[in-house]
Amino acid sequence: MSLKSCSRSPLQCSGNRILLYTSVAGFASGSLNVVTSPIACLNELTHQPFDLAAVAFHATSLKERKALVELCLVVRKNPHSANTLLTCLVAGKHRVLLESLQDAGVAHVMLLESLDDSLAGRLQCFVENRTGAFATDNVLAEICPYIHYVPISRRREILYCRAYRDRLVLGPHLLNLYCETRTFSDCPYYRQPKFAKRPRGQQTRNPWNT
Image 1 (cartoon, rainbow, N blue to C red):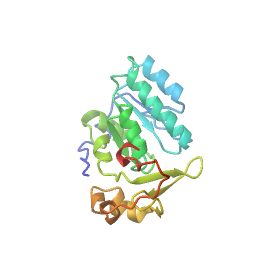
Image 2 (cartoon, rainbow, N blue to C red; image 1 turned 30 degrees about the vertical axis):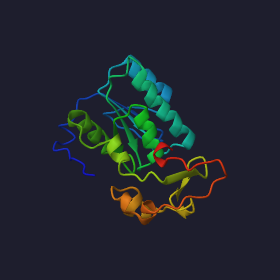
Image 3 (tube, rainbow, N blue to C red; image 1 turned 90 degrees about the horizontal axis):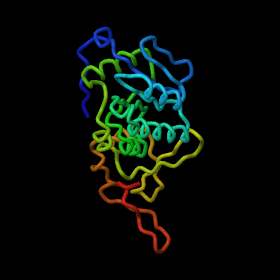
Image 4 (spheres, helix red, strand yellow; image 1 turned 90 degrees about the vertical axis):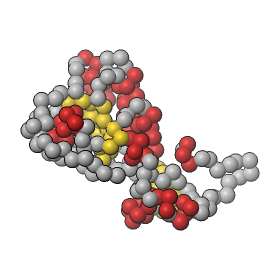
């Protein structure tokens, strides 16, 4: 996956009204309108015009993550905000999250390990020429459908390989080598999957639909 760079400086990509939702404590930017609750975000979008709404999924619990997906869905369906350009900021390629965002009508996502001082410039350039973000469906096309996400706490999940009986834990090495790349179909487990045995009467679900 290639990412087109913005040829303009942050100062050149300026002047657009951008609303940012984030739960990162203390994050502030002079050129961004920052809100820290979904209700405040929706209220701003339905009462004022913005060139872009950005929803950051950093530092959220699994429950909060679900609520933010619902926020995106409401933003897309509300007639006062439906036409506002919307992008989501995510820390990694999480298939289930990205599928939920796609279903909610989010067409673009930004892959950012963290939020920093460069964010305002990145978002301004995205408004100007759609650089700095990926199409959600393109990111999804590079994620193996056999990744199984299992919650282990309010904020954390462990990743298993469904193609290897849900026993193989997926760490950074395998994720970067196969699972979260366009070459995931070259993985030996993907090519010859071995599914966990299920009780009689249950069938292995199509991984594309989970």
